[in-house]
Image 1 (cartoon, rainbow, N blue to C red):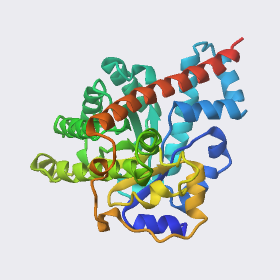
Image 2: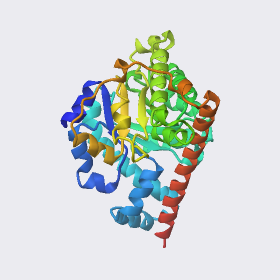
Image 3: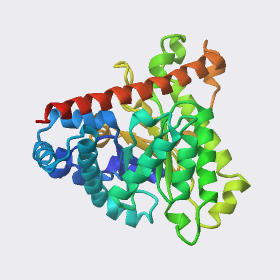
Image 4: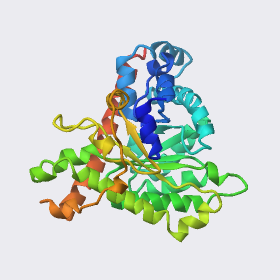
Length: 355
């Protein structure tokens, strides 16, 4: 166990890795990360696009899949990604077991083209969950308006959900409520409610990238952290309400906030800006490999933001609440588009391999 990750764990935060590839699995890299204290994995279309483009470790399987008669590029991709996620789930299963089914998850995202299509998202979420067939898999669902019934339905079936692309507190709260609605619909005779989990992936650095363009220098690099801390206050309020507490008595878990997009985009910022300032109980930080390496190779004194005085930075800065809401709404649309483009790119790569 890495001492620096242990420090973070002692503040009741989990560190997950925002990366996966066939090579990382085959070389034992993921297993090594888990030994260091990494307790979960997140993936997305961009991560798989990078893996398929940069590694030749998939070539044999691609050829076998094509030889078996599969010609549809999306179906080929799903077979490849399902294998990777299944193998990763098995590596993380001892963590899942040790943490009493409250950690040790591996996330896979539904087709980003379904982000605004409720029915197709539900169908694909069920397909991925049943195909992977591991208790510690999480299905990633975009936190759109159309995604809310998807969250509710999958949770009601006992399928773990990672709500992704959350930028605004409003959509985070909507997603938390959808999770609770799903818990209420669970058939207690078919699903053990204590084994049902969800995280809400709240994106960080992309907010500062946009907001920093229009605010004064004194507040640059601070608004995204403030927005996340306020979301955590929303989390505390929602999951201390009687509506959830009645479910908690039956064994229900809270929907943890997961900090996503936590690598700094501005080279002038400290590399661990979105790690050191986002520590709080029952949270997750999913970090890319460069941030992971920065954590394990440096000595830091970590402390929870609950020990700090919270100042209303949005009111202090030159940005209005309306402008900030417009930025977060746009970031959701852009996030979906970027994942769609990455998905299209990996499909194009697979099409090149077809005879």
